[in-house]
Length: 293
Image (tube, rainbow, N blue to C red; front, top):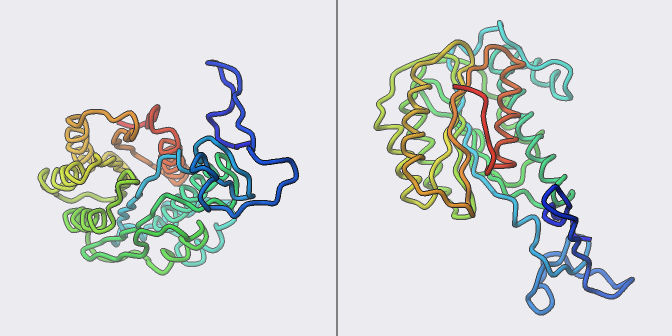
């Protein structure tokens, strides 16, 4: 049977399974080839189903992480999440706020991978693209439009970067806009997750520019600001601007956009919960709700 979740029963009605159209004990067809008669799809294990490929029904995103790595991120008041498979690897290099963020990034990537495996099975290529922009008063691109790296491989790509330098939100947002535009795809909804433990000024128009540019390219931007510490008035205002632009765009039920959000994470556990919540909101964009202000 097709593993697509649309075939499963729920409160609205009974299950409607989709079975392979080929004869019993047939030879497996080549996954990815054109379906017989041009109807349906060939699964990764060689069966022909007349329904839509479930891998293509999952909304895909280009998630651009914009992470503050300024000097204050070297503070040791918050450390990597404990008792995870990657705790030792992160702590040995960044036993500080940067390490706490890397723990949460890995948790996000792992959650998205698990959601894909649960929906369509293992071995299906990831359709999400990931970019990671690290900033202080300079820009460091550790990951750009990546489709293939595993959560562990992605972690390895960011681990070389520690903390240091000043804080420049304007530079970071402009770089995010450049990455978004350069790697634009009509198949993917753009998402920016912007994290900082500090605060600096940025003009409303700079945030409005990236949001309007996204709309002009075809999809509204979903912007999520995460304050790694107390209330951050600048990040809150950035979110308000993003929400204004997002709210002015007519809703598209075929390509729903996760509502922009602002969240405060006061410690490592809350930060991990925030990133897992963001990953879950991408899994069910129609009903996404983020806890925050």
